[in-house]
Length: 368
Ligand SMILES: Nc1ncnc2c1ncn2[C@@H]1O[C@H](COP(=O)(O)OP(=O)(O)O)[C@@H](O)[C@H]1O
Ligand SMILES: [Mg+2]
Image 1: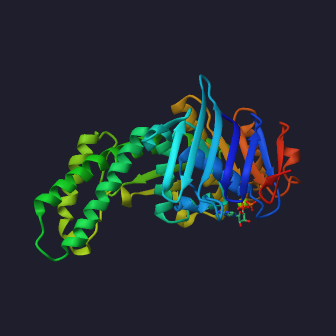
Image 2: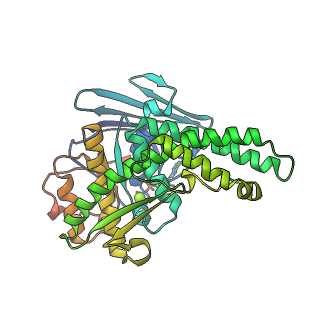
Image 3: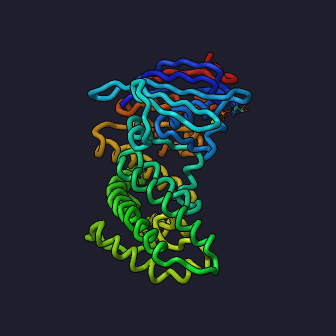
């Protein structure tokens, strides 16, 4: 799919902007703090309704203004879409072809994006929360059902934690708690099941790509580690039973700690190179290559699931990668994946590119 046009209004340092894009490579070129990342972020927000840089969407509204607006024209194999999103301090609204969308899961996934930013290099090394967020964002945009179950899960989890806190050492309403636990296991078992399926497919692609990037010197594998023990042949129903059973065993602990100790909100994802844990034993180079392989794997996975490649956003990452990895990256996207790349300089890049890029000079919230 392609993003052919983007319009911004009051988006961070862009007062008003209207751009038409090339179907292959688009480069946002400029000094620091001019608005390159803001542009990439706006495309990401248009697709996901959330920013990768902040949990406070209000932050993207231009200082002193009371709303921000993003709209984009999308060309897919069999359709054309206009996506619109507006943000005010009170919340956000989304539209597809001018029709307002009430459910997140109806909107997210219409424009598929893969973003590779410097902070992704810590996907391996960073906190488990980063890896869970990664799974949620990637799986959420290819499977609306996942997004639905995840939203339900998070709502029930909040409710359960609130109750555990409120009741403290007082009289516990075990029947009520049981109902909440059942609801948690109900949505949570779908979340676990879908994460497991997704990570198996992602691993398959990541393995192929990692092999290519390292000249078949390294074998990458991934392991999903949910807090509920599962086996590959387990159905959603089986997982739910195991979930409830383990929750019952942990009930005392939850009452003591006044929080929910088990469930997808505590899941972990691990990476191995030749059976060695990359997080603990990998060199910085291996961690980077792993992050890159996983991101490139997403491109293939989206194509497998949706039938089209997503668009790719590369924020200032070329300079973080060595020559071999840069060349591999450019070869991967060459001609088939519409790419938006931000950089402060073209010097390292130009001789590696085979397509002529469209270059946008970014200067203080304007395109020159
Ligand atoms: N809500 C906002 N309103 C106006 N300007 C903003 C807002 N948020 C960030 N900025 C400005 O955007 C600029 C940073 O843009 P960014 O895209 O991160 O730069 P870079 O080109 O280095 O990627 C800074 O000058 C910052 O002051
Ligand atoms: Mg930047």
